[in-house]
Image (cartoon, rainbow over all chains, first blue to last red):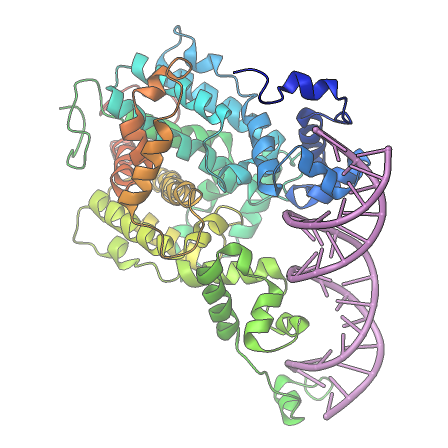
Length: 245
Length: 245
DNA sequence: ACCTGAACACCGTTCAAGT
DNA sequence: ACCTGAACACCGTTCAAGT
């Protein structure tokens, strides 16, 4: 059990060259580049340049570009305020919407992260923590374990999907222009569409301009929450038509 | 009004070199590369190589790589069966779910497109047509114009967001392994998680393994549809608590 | 008008060599 | 153990020149 293999301590005693950085510093650099120049500005090479080392030195800390992106996502998602979900006081639906609005704000501060979230498996520690808190909140709301687990996914999809689509219309560099400005931009673009071909769209431009608003974000989430099966326990499959059983 | 500038017809008479391709062929090539090697296999240069021309020749047909991706998205999204939505016969909620399930199938046949959809503005003709059909269906369902427009966005977010997250766990190359296989893979991965740190998650592994299933997809969408405001016309803002007014 | 040829300024990743 | 130096096989995009 001892002596056959060199332990980490023994290796340390040989005093090899010490790490010049920590993974934290690598992610710091990547996040800074992301916020300065959008996702296109983040590369193994740009991180290396920012830290003053050769490109391949970065591979001491991350396995690949994908792994670097994963670490950045982890950093940002890990800053989400899960207390909003686990706090037993507020009504559960309100808690979820308040939490989601805060998560939206957080993601809008690092817009490129929203896109990355939809492009890689959400299986990191931060995503697990978020999922766990959501499941906890939904259980408090009286949903069965199975319905809670289904609901948690639908809620994450609606939340992250909304922000990703919102961000997709920007250059991905924070700070984004104010919501009101982006809505005005959308409105003028929508005002040019052909009412003969798209009549419903044509007469909905006002609301559609606000698709990227916090109001629409909360509205969609509220609709989803209102449609979740109640504790009463209806089949929660496909069949239900309307209201409470 | 005439004679001061050469018209397109006059230019044609000079018989310049004719186009070797059409935009259709460019998109064909890009889509084929996308399906053979995932999104990483599509580049201006790979499309050029496949067509036997120099890289910069592609710029005769598309303005940039982003423009090429936009055209590929347009091609795939344009193949969606909107008749499911505009057909006045079926119940509107059923129509939306059936349509969304078909759209999911279509996107899973070109997995990389789902990711692209979340990474660029959805303002192409195909997206307009889809939105218009959705608005039409929701109007038939009795929603007000404003609620219909809000609902349309929430439905698109839920639909495309679900597929994008599902695809994010694959290599993006069709054909994807069967759903059952991908679920099994998820289950074995979920079976390793720490029940002390994530107790709710730990006891929900069975349902969570199925997050990428057609069943979960329809379940989330159904919940959203069930939560939409009825024609009765409640405020549809923030306040409502439960059921019909 | 469209393509070729050539170049610029990048990329991620790998390998061997230094310390 | 970690970094340097150098290289490989790519990118998107631009420009001038041919036809």
